[in-house]
Image (tube, rainbow, N blue to C red; front, side, top):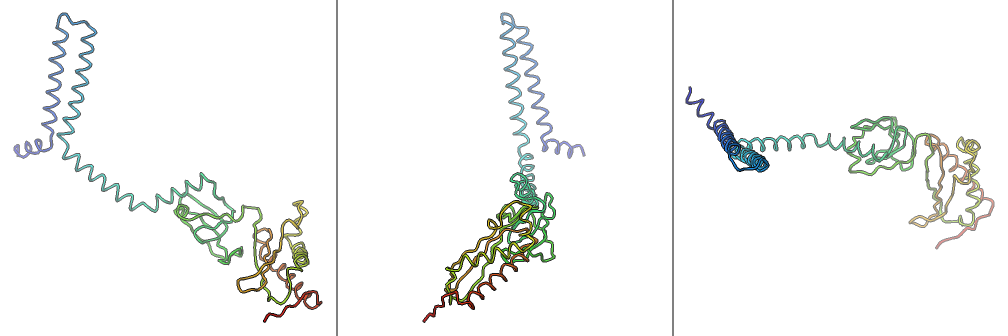
Length: 278
């Protein structure tokens, strides 16, 4: 039994470490006494040699212990490295979520009540924590603020791989764009002013337009109509207006109805030049 214990002690390096430390203490004791008993050495020289000897012995002790315990240290380092790698792989998504949360906080990207789009998901921010953001989802149709009735949980790791688009802030208005296409049988360019006036009239008749006096702004600054053509040669009207997100749908329908009615009236009244294409 004693032989087994002795062999384990030798293999573990305990006896070697103890022998090294004992030898170094003995050297320090002998040399220290010799310096103190030596005659003809100034006190300053004795203190310098004593300090130098102490530092050299400490360095030798550190190097010696490292060499004695090198196999055990190597095994421990490999185990620690393997554990660290496994931990990083297992917690990769969690670490990315914390990093994304830090990015959101430092950049002040969005807050509760804002209207955002992350990773193809659009909605109103309901809540967020260190790991996820919870949004009330909007329809996938571009520019639509109609709610689907679903809530979506977005991990903050998306903030590191996808851009964040803030479409509007809490309590504010958003910029909304929609297009209307007409057959190319009339000159809508010449009637752009009349069409924009009809759109403005419809806009002022909505709840959003009625809120203009409270804001002290002109509705003309909040709605514009552009005339262009599509890829297949049809007329395309691009309508841009600003509105509260919850009023976008009603406002768009009112403007589209008024524009369509205005274009029809212009045709029936003979105020549009009809062109026949061969």
